[in-house]
Amino acid sequence: MESIQLTINGKQLAGHRGQTILEVAGENNIDIPHLCYHPRISKTGACRICLVRVNGTMLKTACTEPVIADMDVVTEDAEISQIRTGLLEMLLSEGCHNCLYCEWNGECELQRLCQKYDVQEPSGVFKNRERTVDTESSNGLRRNENRCILCGRCVKACGEIQMQGVWNFTGRGSSTTLTSDMFAKLGDSSCVMCGTCVQLCPTGALSFQTVLGRGQAWDLKKETSVCIYCGVGCQIDFYTNKEGQLVKAIGNENGPNEGHLCVKGRFGFDFVQSDKRLTKPLIKKNGKFEEASWDEALDLVSSKLTEIKSKSGPDSIMAFSSAKCTNEENYLMQKFMRAVIGTNNVDHCARL
Image (tube, rainbow, N blue to C red):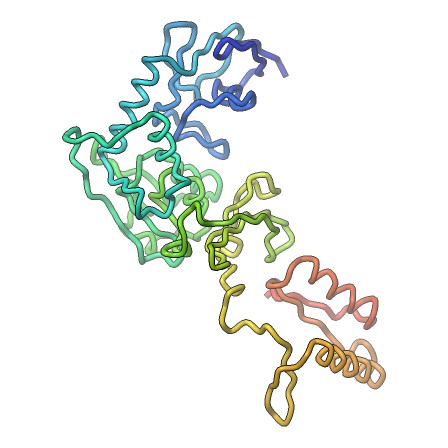
């Protein structure tokens, strides 16, 4: 791959043909502010926040401008800072970005940039326009378009990653809004609730139903695990609140799934805190289930399996495993049936 030498903020760097200024800067830990860009989708150049100065004169969007030999890039100067401040002010003024009651408070990329450039919401520049607020039609997702900055991330996430094509733009100019299959409500659309659009949204215009009222972003503790539902091995960052409840699942972008999740992986964790979940073994005595110790329950199961195997043979026993166990537990189940019981009669609920 052809190497290209360039300078960013006075530092000699190497990129390769096809890379953009933003990509080379990111590889070298140089921060260039951006909102519409995300590495998992195609380049847009819509928000203009990533403007940089090239060769002393030209202003270019770093997310779309390819690097060329001997290019000299300045990522921040007085004029660029002023332009970014103005753009952020306009984004704030045409929407409703009250961070106090937003579920993305603490993770919002617009919030972070406004803090960096000390941007306050201006008065009298634009009239706040009321857009679609849909908090109930979808079982998994919430939509508050008053927080939307029309970056297009959700459109491309749905079209390029999930390939569902639910989200799109409608209208022109200041009347531009999002539409979900031309329906006002997301629940009426063909959305499969993979949640990728929410994960890529930079502002909280799209959010998860599971988070509402159960903790702010900075209250949540992250634990990385592997999805329990199939053999792909998708990595998930699970978030728990102060009460220990699972409230959010975000696809880990370093896993084999590159951050993408299906509806099961995204929302299928509610059973963990179900009040119907058994926490102690139950043994039926005199027609009623009674709590028992683990030793008592395991001894009973062991004796019954031994009795059945001796009378009717190993193929008279089968095991039905669960997607709500870990992959390791499911592996042990099939190993137990094949190596200890001596049968291949093993099945798994995901196949149904």
